[in-house]
Length: 196
Image (cartoon, one colour):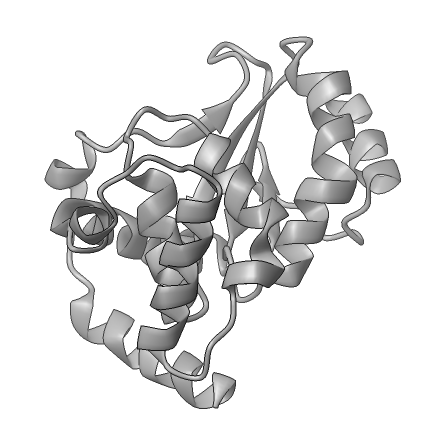
């Protein structure tokens, strides 16, 4: 079922692809860190990806403490949804349009509670229930039907494939180069220290 849903989602993306540059100017990128940081990390992620959730649990806290909070690194989170549930969750993460990562972090920390369901409708129901339980105050239906945010997310995915050959999540890009080593903090720290 999951493979079938992923295939349908990819077909949907192909038929939805167009240029969204004008619309994107009003949607804020989810980022952490100083704009002037010497190193920029782009993280292509899918909110239903367990490896992405592990990155946020096991790697990101140390990365934030050692590099981001010290002004050395800026990280930009880009959407690369692998299925409809991730696509809808990306819309929710982006919905406040304030550039904050708070809703995205809530979604990753509770991923096992909402990233399930046999149909897109069931998955959407779990997502809505989870957000209500976490007291996330958004207009759920309005967020899911926001075409500007939808186009923004699709454009992230399309650009990831075209520019960086992204084909899995998470994919980490550091100063426009794909990070090819195993994604753990030790490897990432070693790589970043060489760039400082």
